[in-house]
Length: 276
Image 1 (cartoon, rainbow, N blue to C red):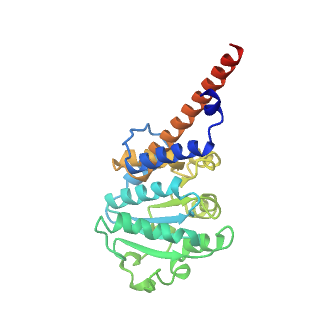
Image 2 (image 1 turned 60 degrees about the horizontal axis):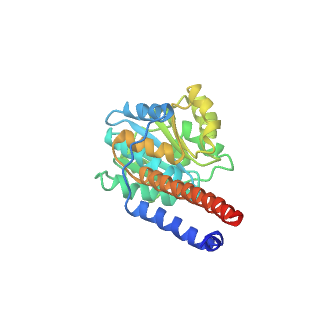
Image 3 (image 1 turned 60 degrees about the vertical axis):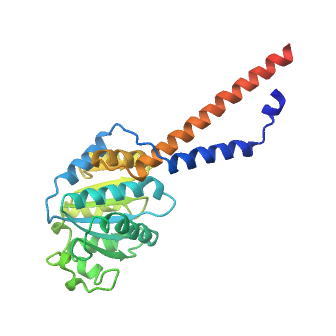
């Protein structure tokens, strides 16, 4: 028995881990998570929005990091709509378009928000490796950068964009970012020059380099990775993909720990049997 367990086909381990993660995603348990100060600051900033305030939101990420930060995008978008804000959405990543569209379908449409009145999708615009041409251009002349919406509606015919010239017409910029162009470029070209408040959501691995911006009040709040997404969902009292993903990750970690403990027990049991 000991020898069979010591030579167990590792595919059984992968299968058990797969079943544990799949089961936890299909039947998620609502976790209550402690909220980090950086996430609380992001929530407090958006919670100051008033009905009719305009929010600029960038979906600058792709499929590889979507499980980490897409839930934060959904949560922040929902919070903005709950406060009565009008949201102008776009992306500097061509990979970000599907997630922008998915956010509209999962949040704006169920909440009864009207396209071009309560929100608008400006689509994708390439601005170079750092996005500087687009980010700087949006500061003074948003119309020149996005003359039409993603659906082809001329800028001047979109009610939500009436009277909007640049960053100074928005209360806050929500930057959901996975790299460059992303948060660093918005701090450099948008906040430093136009003083627009920035709230960001980034991957866990890139969060440490963004914390100094929060301490320097160039970023007003920050969600980092899947944990930050789950914490923001906790604050708006709307469990979603963040909390479900965090529960699945917790289950996976427990299964791995159980295998480590079990493997060590088998090892020492085998040594004891050989000595006997």
